[in-house]
Amino acid sequence: QKEVEQDPGPLSVPEGAIVSLNCTYSNSAFQYFMWYRQYSRKGPELLMYTYSSGNKEDGRFTAQVDKSSKYISLFIRDSQPSDSATYLCAMSEWSGNTPLVFGKGTRLSVIA
Amino acid sequence: SQTIHQWPATLVQPVGSPLSLECTVEGTSNPNLYWYRQAAGRGLQLLFYSVGIGQISSEVPQNLSASRPQDRQFILSSKKLLLSDSGFYLCAWSVLWEDRGYEQYFGPGTRLTVT
Image 1: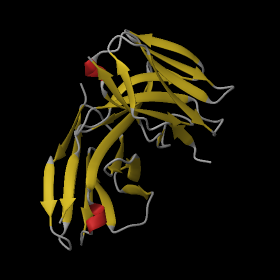
Image 2 (image 1 turned 90 degrees about the vertical axis):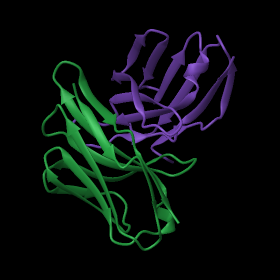
Image 3 (image 1 turned 120 degrees about the vertical axis):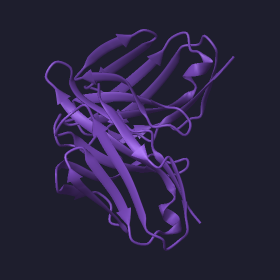
């Protein structure tokens, strides 16, 4: 079993839809959870960051962590064509010298 | 503010030629530094990471090497490139902030094509 599982998609939705992106993980020691957005031919951009369980909201984006289920989600409300990108989840056991473990990314297309 | 630079942005090299990619970080001190490779249609593969000058950890055995000659400089090298070395190379840095936790940021990347 891979440490982090993420459906690669592609996921295609109409403009204005609510998008749900998810990752599951196996390591119960993970406590830092991040979402990155990567546009084609660009470096990943840190989108959301969550420590331990709970929700975090930033504009149209909401990140959720359910440590009991080892499941994290990113919700995008009122999706826009500019949200079309690959979204990568990443997680770490603790802050410091442990590299992040990444999912393979989900490719999202928002159709106008 | 912190900035990460990578160069060159694009590189085309013949098989068997050497490689040197450079990454520098501004606006922070003693960052952890990372080299990743992203092959077409595939996920991020961690190649090397460094927690300090001269300290390099290798994640994947291959014909690449990394060095950190200065606190905010990270170099990826190869003596002889293989076709399989083609990909998108990303440098990243991370730091633990007292007020907002652990964050990792990526550079713009270098697209390497080995012909």
